Length: 444
Length: 152
Image (cartoon, rainbow over all chains, first blue to last red; front, top):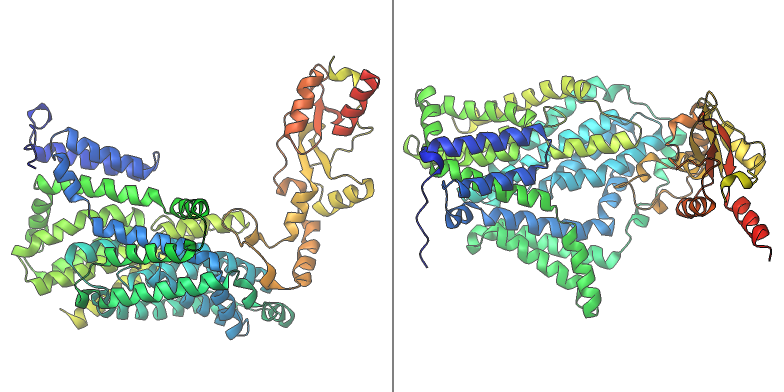
């Protein structure tokens, strides 16, 4: 089947001008947060086609189905797994391992959050860890703020470490054909270092003053984490599938497979294990319910953004930007890498990092003429570190931050925008400084 | 027929917004009621529900959506509840979300009053033209009146 050629753009304007106008308008409305971001992105995508910048085939081609499948598959797996109570189990166990010592608890909750965020999405992780955090600090009669602050930081830092930890990495990995292992080897170490170093200022600001009475600690030690496991069969099935999926990610490259297929297959396998012994009607009900828990807002946001970005990419705007960046840095590779790292970090602290990364991916791809493939890989790490760690800068920097703030508010312990930023922004910049040193030592 | 014909609950106690939750709870227990009206300078402000006071005794992390689904793993938890009971003295009725209920007046038709009562799990306030609380209309009062009217 042949597709019709791109129609004449509206009003006879150049595709570059039209596509940029749609792009700027879309992003501007997204930033105002007045209208749901998925709706705005889909409208922007539609306009790109109606205005004749793209035809439908080109628009569909712009949608990275590997990213969409990976996100959707992991969301299904997480939606099922969280019902087993395993996250609560681990959080309570972690608190008891350190005998409910306040500082030990903060370190453990941060580590648990970081590890879960590396393997699952950040929002789910904090949705599961923050309530347990609030409960334990309630029992210990300590203000939860330092703990919630650390959970936010740990979720974004942990998410940086792997291909599947944070949506920017999923997008970068998919576009640049970087594997799970590539991320683990290249950004994993710096994420671990940043996590450890972040705990030092947190200790001096809050940690050393945290105290809990022995009777309150005894209360936490009396928690029975085994009671958290509400469905042992589900737990076994979920852990089996997650282990299989992660093994799949690790060996994906050797097997010649993409992460999207692995995640989607894992989701289907877990659904099968959940329903194979049920009647047809119960199966439909259970699967309908699980699919209902997928965050479709995020998925449709991605779909719309991919099309909008495909529009400006086809019109040549991103190649132009790439040339400008290279020109501005005088073709100096180190300066380009640092520019990407720092600009990504600062922008991701104040705006959603997903649209930013969606835009930057074709920009970096267009730099192929100026730099070698090995150098381009380093730019991917700079973008990943900047976009993921930058999310820590303000309360609106990442969805997980807002989720924690929302829960804290409902629990009567609000996390305010300015006080959070005054602490978080410098700490975020410090993590980017650490990343700069890492890039310098390892690659530059 | 309108509400004018229905005898209201006698002597409604109206709490001031700064009444402590502990005091409100004690009054509820003394009077054997599950709700107490709250008035600001005599003007109706809302209804405090005993279930909200019970909610204050639970860990905040288990209240509301996305909270902890169950608390079995916490075990006994008496010490935790005791801490929260002590805190009731420092919390005011205004700190809990008061029930936002439709208000009635003496000209409200009985059928409309019956429908509104059926839709809300609490007695409803009957206000004067100046917004002051004249009394609370309970299911029992309305039903007793209706039965007497029909005369069976």
